[in-house]
Image (tube, rainbow, N blue to C red):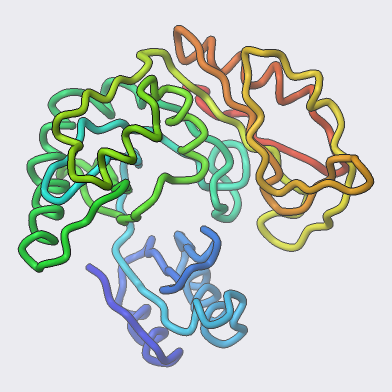
Length: 301
Protein backbone atom coordinates (compact mmCIF):
# COMPACT_ATOMS: atom_id res chain seq x y z
CA UNK A 1 0.00 0.00 0.00
CA UNK A 2 1.44 3.35 -1.08
CA UNK A 3 -0.18 6.74 -1.73
CA UNK A 4 1.33 10.06 -2.81
CA UNK A 5 0.13 13.52 -1.77
CA UNK A 6 0.96 17.10 -2.70
CA UNK A 7 -1.45 18.80 -0.28
CA UNK A 8 -1.28 18.68 3.50
CA UNK A 9 -4.99 18.31 4.18
CA UNK A 10 -5.30 15.41 1.78
CA UNK A 11 -2.35 13.66 3.39
CA UNK A 12 -3.74 14.25 6.88
CA UNK A 13 -7.19 12.95 5.93
CA UNK A 14 -5.61 9.83 4.46
CA UNK A 15 -3.61 9.22 7.63
CA UNK A 16 -6.89 9.08 9.57
CA UNK A 17 -7.73 5.91 7.64
CA UNK A 18 -4.33 4.20 7.88
CA UNK A 19 -3.29 1.48 10.31
CA UNK A 20 -0.47 2.34 12.70
CA UNK A 21 2.52 2.08 12.47
CA UNK A 22 2.77 3.86 9.12
CA UNK A 23 5.68 5.19 7.04
CA UNK A 24 5.85 8.81 5.85
CA UNK A 25 8.49 9.71 3.25
CA UNK A 26 9.58 12.95 1.66
CA UNK A 27 9.35 12.12 -2.04
CA UNK A 28 12.59 13.90 -3.02
CA UNK A 29 16.22 13.55 -1.97
CA UNK A 30 16.57 14.36 1.72
CA UNK A 31 20.06 13.05 2.56
CA UNK A 32 18.59 9.84 3.95
CA UNK A 33 16.64 11.71 6.64
CA UNK A 34 13.23 12.16 4.98
CA UNK A 35 11.64 8.96 6.31
CA UNK A 36 9.56 8.67 9.47
CA UNK A 37 8.35 5.33 10.79
CA UNK A 38 5.45 6.67 12.83
CA UNK A 39 4.48 4.56 15.81
CA UNK A 40 1.53 6.82 16.63
CA UNK A 41 -0.89 8.82 14.50
CA UNK A 42 0.42 12.03 16.07
CA UNK A 43 3.96 11.20 14.93
CA UNK A 44 2.60 10.72 11.41
CA UNK A 45 0.81 14.11 11.54
CA UNK A 46 4.04 15.72 12.74
CA UNK A 47 6.00 14.13 9.88
CA UNK A 48 3.73 15.50 7.15
CA UNK A 49 3.58 18.91 8.83
CA UNK A 50 7.37 19.18 9.07
CA UNK A 51 7.75 18.03 5.47
CA UNK A 52 4.92 19.87 3.71
CA UNK A 53 4.23 22.97 5.81
CA UNK A 54 7.49 23.68 7.63
CA UNK A 55 9.44 22.44 4.57
CA UNK A 56 12.30 20.99 6.63
CA UNK A 57 13.51 19.18 3.51
CA UNK A 58 12.86 22.03 1.11
CA UNK A 59 11.30 21.08 -2.22
CA UNK A 60 12.13 17.43 -1.53
CA UNK A 61 9.30 17.33 1.01
CA UNK A 62 6.60 19.14 -0.95
CA UNK A 63 5.32 15.73 -2.01
CA UNK A 64 5.01 12.95 0.55
CA UNK A 65 4.53 9.23 0.19
CA UNK A 66 2.49 7.41 2.82
CA UNK A 67 2.98 3.67 2.78
CA UNK A 68 2.58 0.43 4.65
CA UNK A 69 5.09 -0.24 7.41
CA UNK A 70 6.95 -3.44 6.60
CA UNK A 71 8.28 -5.47 9.50
CA UNK A 72 11.24 -7.82 9.36
CA UNK A 73 14.98 -7.77 8.69
CA UNK A 74 16.05 -5.11 6.20
CA UNK A 75 18.77 -6.18 3.77
CA UNK A 76 20.62 -4.16 1.12
CA UNK A 77 21.44 -6.14 -2.02
CA UNK A 78 23.92 -5.08 -4.71
CA UNK A 79 24.66 -6.33 -8.20
CA UNK A 80 26.51 -5.10 -11.27
CA UNK A 81 24.17 -4.97 -14.26
CA UNK A 82 24.78 -4.60 -18.00
CA UNK A 83 21.39 -4.79 -19.63
CA UNK A 84 19.47 -7.93 -18.67
CA UNK A 85 22.49 -9.63 -17.07
CA UNK A 86 22.72 -9.44 -13.27
CA UNK A 87 26.03 -10.40 -11.65
CA UNK A 88 26.24 -12.59 -8.54
CA UNK A 89 24.87 -10.47 -5.75
CA UNK A 90 26.38 -9.29 -2.47
CA UNK A 91 24.43 -8.09 0.55
CA UNK A 92 24.78 -6.03 3.72
CA UNK A 93 22.70 -4.84 6.66
CA UNK A 94 22.74 -1.23 7.83
CA UNK A 95 21.49 0.68 10.86
CA UNK A 96 19.34 3.73 10.12
CA UNK A 97 18.24 4.90 13.58
CA UNK A 98 20.60 7.26 15.37
CA UNK A 99 20.61 5.55 18.77
CA UNK A 100 21.52 2.21 20.28
CA UNK A 101 18.72 -0.31 20.16
CA UNK A 102 17.33 1.30 16.99
CA UNK A 103 16.03 4.33 18.85
CA UNK A 104 15.68 7.94 17.76
CA UNK A 105 15.17 9.43 14.31
CA UNK A 106 16.33 7.97 11.00
CA UNK A 107 19.72 8.98 9.64
CA UNK A 108 21.70 8.37 6.49
CA UNK A 109 23.10 5.30 8.27
CA UNK A 110 25.11 4.79 11.45
CA UNK A 111 26.94 1.62 10.51
CA UNK A 112 26.65 -1.67 8.64
CA UNK A 113 28.01 -5.15 8.21
CA UNK A 114 28.44 -7.66 5.41
CA UNK A 115 27.49 -10.38 4.77
CA UNK A 116 24.17 -10.58 6.64
CA UNK A 117 23.52 -13.50 8.95
CA UNK A 118 22.85 -16.79 7.11
CA UNK A 119 19.17 -16.75 8.00
CA UNK A 120 18.88 -13.35 6.28
CA UNK A 121 21.04 -14.02 3.21
CA UNK A 122 21.72 -17.45 1.76
CA UNK A 123 21.59 -19.27 -1.57
CA UNK A 124 17.84 -19.78 -1.39
CA UNK A 125 17.07 -16.13 -0.62
CA UNK A 126 19.53 -14.95 -3.27
CA UNK A 127 17.88 -17.18 -5.87
CA UNK A 128 14.43 -15.90 -4.93
CA UNK A 129 15.52 -12.26 -5.05
CA UNK A 130 17.23 -12.80 -8.41
CA UNK A 131 14.30 -14.53 -10.10
CA UNK A 132 11.45 -12.55 -8.53
CA UNK A 133 12.92 -9.05 -8.29
CA UNK A 134 16.28 -8.25 -9.87
CA UNK A 135 16.01 -10.02 -13.22
CA UNK A 136 12.41 -8.93 -13.91
CA UNK A 137 13.47 -5.33 -13.25
CA UNK A 138 16.51 -5.42 -15.52
CA UNK A 139 14.59 -7.28 -18.27
CA UNK A 140 11.75 -4.79 -17.92
CA UNK A 141 14.15 -1.91 -18.54
CA UNK A 142 15.48 -3.70 -21.62
CA UNK A 143 11.93 -4.19 -22.88
CA UNK A 144 11.25 -0.48 -22.37
CA UNK A 145 14.22 0.40 -24.54
CA UNK A 146 16.32 1.81 -21.71
CA UNK A 147 18.70 -0.96 -20.63
CA UNK A 148 20.59 -0.14 -17.47
CA UNK A 149 24.34 -0.54 -17.04
CA UNK A 150 25.79 0.11 -13.64
CA UNK A 151 25.37 -0.81 -10.00
CA UNK A 152 21.84 -1.74 -8.96
CA UNK A 153 20.98 -1.42 -5.27
CA UNK A 154 17.88 -3.14 -3.89
CA UNK A 155 16.69 -2.24 -0.42
CA UNK A 156 14.35 -5.00 0.75
CA UNK A 157 12.57 -6.23 3.84
CA UNK A 158 12.47 -9.93 4.68
CA UNK A 159 8.87 -10.22 5.88
CA UNK A 160 6.86 -13.27 6.87
CA UNK A 161 5.46 -13.12 3.32
CA UNK A 162 8.94 -13.17 1.78
CA UNK A 163 11.18 -10.40 0.37
CA UNK A 164 9.43 -7.06 -0.20
CA UNK A 165 10.96 -4.15 -2.10
CA UNK A 166 11.60 -0.98 -0.08
CA UNK A 167 13.63 0.96 -2.64
CA UNK A 168 15.92 0.82 -5.66
CA UNK A 169 18.99 2.96 -6.25
CA UNK A 170 21.53 3.11 -9.07
CA UNK A 171 24.57 3.39 -6.80
CA UNK A 172 26.38 1.75 -3.93
CA UNK A 173 24.80 2.60 -0.60
CA UNK A 174 26.21 4.58 2.30
CA UNK A 175 27.29 3.19 4.78
CA UNK A 176 27.08 -0.16 2.97
CA UNK A 177 29.82 0.79 0.48
CA UNK A 178 32.33 0.89 3.32
CA UNK A 179 31.72 -2.79 4.14
CA UNK A 180 31.10 -4.02 0.58
CA UNK A 181 34.20 -2.70 -1.19
CA UNK A 182 36.75 -4.06 1.32
CA UNK A 183 35.34 -7.52 0.49
CA UNK A 184 35.70 -7.06 -3.29
CA UNK A 185 38.80 -8.95 -4.47
CA UNK A 186 38.37 -8.31 -8.20
CA UNK A 187 39.70 -4.99 -9.49
CA UNK A 188 36.75 -2.57 -9.24
CA UNK A 189 37.91 -0.58 -12.27
CA UNK A 190 37.91 -3.72 -14.41
CA UNK A 191 34.42 -4.66 -13.20
CA UNK A 192 33.09 -1.20 -14.02
CA UNK A 193 34.77 -1.23 -17.43
CA UNK A 194 33.23 -4.61 -18.24
CA UNK A 195 29.86 -3.29 -17.09
CA UNK A 196 30.11 -0.24 -19.32
CA UNK A 197 31.19 -2.33 -22.32
CA UNK A 198 28.46 -4.93 -21.86
CA UNK A 199 31.03 -7.64 -21.15
CA UNK A 200 30.06 -8.37 -17.56
CA UNK A 201 28.72 -11.87 -18.12
CA UNK A 202 32.18 -13.16 -19.02
CA UNK A 203 33.83 -11.73 -15.90
CA UNK A 204 34.31 -13.62 -12.66
CA UNK A 205 33.74 -11.29 -9.70
CA UNK A 206 35.31 -12.61 -6.52
CA UNK A 207 34.46 -11.62 -2.95
CA UNK A 208 36.39 -12.10 0.28
CA UNK A 209 34.49 -14.59 2.43
CA UNK A 210 35.41 -12.70 5.60
CA UNK A 211 32.99 -10.40 7.41
CA UNK A 212 33.31 -6.63 7.40
CA UNK A 213 31.89 -4.20 9.96
CA UNK A 214 31.73 -0.42 9.65
CA UNK A 215 30.89 2.05 12.43
CA UNK A 216 30.01 5.70 11.76
CA UNK A 217 31.24 8.53 13.98
CA UNK A 218 28.85 11.49 13.86
CA UNK A 219 28.64 15.08 15.05
CA UNK A 220 26.71 15.79 18.24
CA UNK A 221 23.13 16.75 17.37
CA UNK A 222 23.01 14.76 14.13
CA UNK A 223 20.63 14.15 12.34
CA UNK A 224 19.22 17.48 13.51
CA UNK A 225 21.38 20.62 13.78
CA UNK A 226 25.05 20.26 14.66
CA UNK A 227 28.23 22.34 14.81
CA UNK A 228 31.22 21.68 12.55
CA UNK A 229 34.85 22.75 12.52
CA UNK A 230 35.99 20.70 15.48
CA UNK A 231 39.50 19.23 15.32
CA UNK A 232 39.65 15.46 14.87
CA UNK A 233 42.42 13.57 16.67
CA UNK A 234 43.51 9.95 16.66
CA UNK A 235 43.17 9.09 12.98
CA UNK A 236 46.90 8.33 12.86
CA UNK A 237 46.43 5.91 15.76
CA UNK A 238 44.21 3.61 13.73
CA UNK A 239 46.07 0.39 12.97
CA UNK A 240 46.52 -1.25 9.58
CA UNK A 241 43.75 -3.76 10.22
CA UNK A 242 41.13 -0.99 9.91
CA UNK A 243 40.14 1.52 7.23
CA UNK A 244 39.02 5.09 7.89
CA UNK A 245 36.55 6.38 5.31
CA UNK A 246 36.27 10.17 5.44
CA UNK A 247 32.83 11.70 4.86
CA UNK A 248 32.12 14.98 6.66
CA UNK A 249 35.72 16.12 7.11
CA UNK A 250 37.87 18.90 5.72
CA UNK A 251 41.30 20.46 6.20
CA UNK A 252 41.82 23.68 8.15
CA UNK A 253 45.40 24.89 8.63
CA UNK A 254 46.68 21.35 7.98
CA UNK A 255 44.35 19.92 10.65
CA UNK A 256 41.48 17.55 9.90
CA UNK A 257 38.20 18.99 11.20
CA UNK A 258 34.56 18.00 11.18
CA UNK A 259 32.52 19.28 8.25
CA UNK A 260 29.28 17.29 8.31
CA UNK A 261 26.83 15.20 10.29
CA UNK A 262 28.31 11.80 9.57
CA UNK A 263 32.00 12.53 9.93
CA UNK A 264 33.77 9.24 9.15
CA UNK A 265 33.41 5.47 9.16
CA UNK A 266 35.87 2.97 10.57
CA UNK A 267 35.63 -0.43 8.88
CA UNK A 268 37.44 -3.70 9.52
CA UNK A 269 37.52 -7.24 8.13
CA UNK A 270 37.55 -10.33 10.32
CA UNK A 271 37.38 -14.11 10.03
CA UNK A 272 34.12 -13.85 11.97
CA UNK A 273 31.60 -11.06 12.41
CA UNK A 274 32.62 -10.80 16.06
CA UNK A 275 36.30 -10.33 15.14
CA UNK A 276 35.48 -7.68 12.53
CA UNK A 277 33.27 -5.86 15.03
CA UNK A 278 35.92 -5.94 17.76
CA UNK A 279 38.57 -4.47 15.42
CA UNK A 280 36.26 -1.73 14.15
CA UNK A 281 35.31 -0.64 17.67
CA UNK A 282 38.85 -0.93 18.99
CA UNK A 283 39.94 1.55 16.34
CA UNK A 284 37.02 3.98 16.27
CA UNK A 285 37.41 4.65 19.99
CA UNK A 286 40.90 6.03 19.23
CA UNK A 287 39.36 8.82 17.13
CA UNK A 288 37.88 11.76 19.02
CA UNK A 289 36.35 15.16 18.32
CA UNK A 290 34.14 17.45 20.39
CA UNK A 291 30.59 16.14 20.85
CA UNK A 292 31.31 13.16 18.59
CA UNK A 293 29.37 9.94 19.09
CA UNK A 294 28.73 6.54 17.54
CA UNK A 295 26.36 3.66 18.11
CA UNK A 296 27.71 0.92 20.33
CA UNK A 297 25.61 -1.92 18.93
CA UNK A 298 26.59 -2.19 15.26
CA UNK A 299 26.73 -5.92 14.40
CA UNK A 300 26.04 -6.81 18.04
CA UNK A 301 23.95 -9.89 17.32
